[in-house]
Length: 183
Image (cartoon, rainbow, N blue to C red; front, side, top):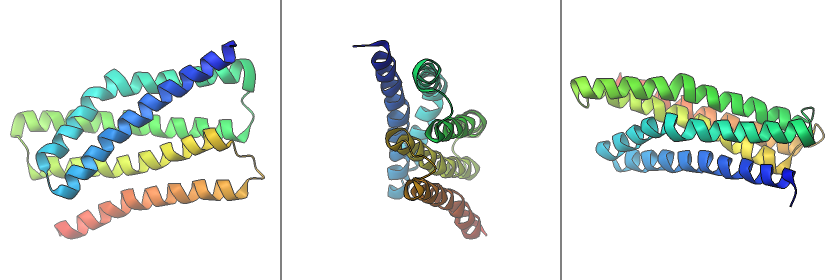
């Protein structure tokens, strides 16, 4: 076994823990939402907030670090699939740091002060909407890492765009429905 194989293994393990763990929490939130179970939904949101800085952020950083090491020593940074992966990572990392983290903290403070209120539930719903888009981005990243598209792979690139559009529609189209139902 060579160093590249070891670093690639560590990259895949950290990515699996990051993406897979987050997906389980997202799925628990969706199932609780569909069942109308507010307490289970809040528990999934609380767990996301608690694990965000302690688990998901370190796993995402390790995924990036091992990926950068592979690119720096063996693969390079010029291939389209590397660029797509880095843009996807920057997108999902930004969603985590600028949406999930502050929203989770704000919800925690609101629940501690006021308990579970309709405004807390509305914030949780918006967070779930953002998670839909975040996981569409993650799905594209996983497909990108496996399929390694070039500019000639129009079908793969079109499929990735379709996944992003579907994720955005599910995320932001749901907010429109939420606003309409509240009116």
